[in-house]
Length: 239
Image 1 (cartoon, rainbow, N blue to C red):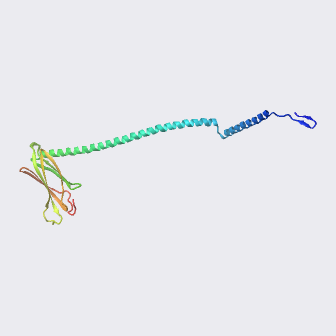
Image 2: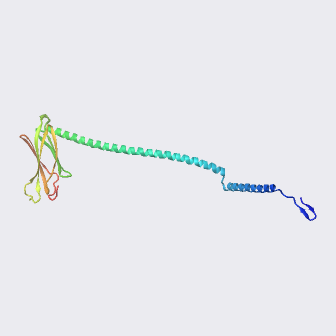
Image 3: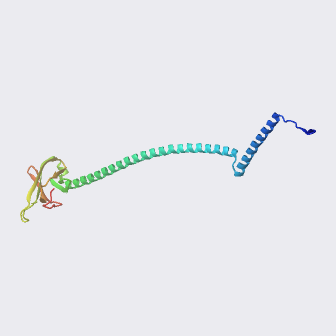
C-alpha cells in the first residue's frame, strides 16, 4: 500500500525474518523440485532405488548361497579324489595279487604235469632211467634240465654220479675231424623216486656245440644217453 503526500513516496518495509523465510522456502522448493525431477528421471529411465536395494539384498543372499555350495562341492571333490586314489591303490594291489596268483597257478600246473610224467615214466621204468633232458640259451651261457627216475616199487635211495659232456668243433678244425670234447660237467645226485637236476654250461669261445652225452652211474649200473644240441652257434661267435 503506497501513501502519497505530494511527491513523497512512502513504502512499507519488509521484515528481514520474512525475507529470509521466503529465501529458505524458495531453496527448499528448489531442492524438492530437484529431488522430484531426479526421481522422475530414474522412474522414466527404469531405475527404482527401493527395488535396487531389494535386488542387491537378494543378490547378496544368492552369492552367499553359491559360495556355500561351492564350498560343499569342493569338499565332495576332495573326498572323491581321495576315494579314487584309494581305489587306484587297491586296484593296483589286486592286479598284482592276481598276476602272482596266475603265475603261481601256472607253476603248479606245470609241476603237476611234471609229476604225472614222472609217475608214468617210473611205472614203465625197470631201473634208473633218464626221463628227459633240455638245454636252452640263457642270458649268459646255457642252462640245462635233466630228469632222472626209478620205479616207485623199488622204494630205495639212489646215489649216482651224473656226467654231461658237450661235443662239438672249434674254429679252424676240419669238417671231417671227429667232434672234440668241449665241456665236462660232473654232478652227484641222491634221490629215491625222481630227481630234477638243473645247472649251467659255459662253452669256450669260438666253438660250435653239436651233441651232449649224458652218463649216469650208480655203482655198477650205468645209463648213457645222447642228445643233439638244440641251437648250434657259429664258430665265429662267442658265448
